[in-house]
Image (cartoon, rainbow, N blue to C red; front, side, top):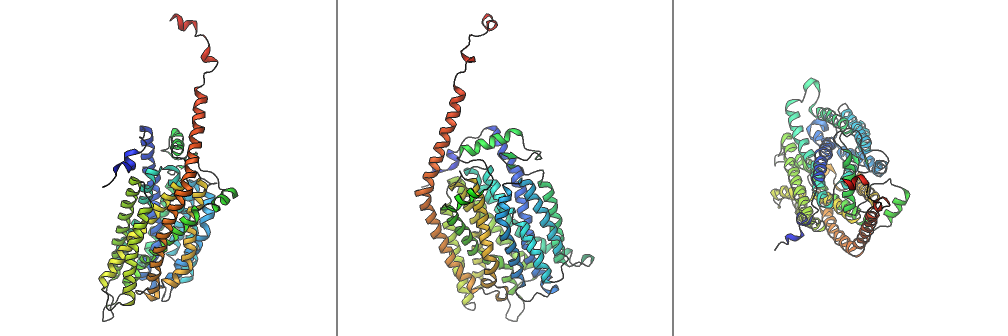
Length: 497
């Protein structure tokens, strides 16, 4: 029987009208900008695969592992810039840094439309990785600064689901462009993909200068919707949950982070969760490589772009559902284990199919891909858990978010060419079998972090919270002390009245 007393909605702090107004405004402006940015980021990032299967391969004569190398160069640059970007974010206003880089990557996206060979794409993908590296970790960090534990997983889930919406829109946009703009003004359809993305990205980046609120203790003066008292209210919300105001990252912050248990567990969990589900990024290539007995392709170009949209929809739905459950029951680790089990089932079937395709139903392979799409929703739960584990140390959470993504991209920049080579599609024997072991690692590391939290981290949070409450009580007592003016005889005019 469900214990409804554990529900966060049954025991959470009752918001004042002012606080409800602040949260509503954050959802309207901060979340809207973040979600649109995420959709466009994934349009820019994943359209390379759609372009590849929509004529780019033939036009640029890409008949080796160039698609893997496009990802590799992007990943190398992304990895290089992640940690510096998060450090800079604590010194430069997010509205300047995040929006400026968004405009820059919009320009780079547009330049891909005029390339003539793979080497030009390599160079542009490298710069695209440099500029895009700030977007996801920067926005996740801002969400940690503005939202409370009963709010954050939902917002992170919605934000991360925009990756799926970006992928869905990317496929739909590719289908629409190939059907309507291919050859228009002498420009191939796959080139129109990058031109349209360029315009969308730059436009949103310009709006961001006037929308992002920056951080609670240093709000954006250009944010037209942000009232002065929102900053005070936001700081009160942080203090209520044992959080402190964001600070600049220093060498002391780095040393403190390195001495904690949290980065080692969270980083491994994040990297493992992403690597284990990596096969879905080659779903379109898998579909393109499938052949009929007579050697013709099973799926048309439009179908190859359209079918993965269903997988992205599954990802978006699972991220929303799991995030809402996570906040409602204030649980993180149980959902991570559940996703890992689902991933194990899908990867195990794909391992069997790749080794015995003639005797294993192809329909099961399709179903397994869609099962793995469910497991992409681990990131918002992990980041919400990170925010819960060390709320008293925002510098460490900022660094850990960067380290998670940086190490993931450091690994994928070289490993995926070996594990998921496009030339072996649709049979990725090594990729699917290795994913089984990685999902098992996710389960082990999750249970290990639960133990560390109960034995070490939770007592540390309780001590910090008790100290904070004691300090606040002293401040209140100081204001309550009678002053000399309080002891004076009331004014005569007052008495006579």
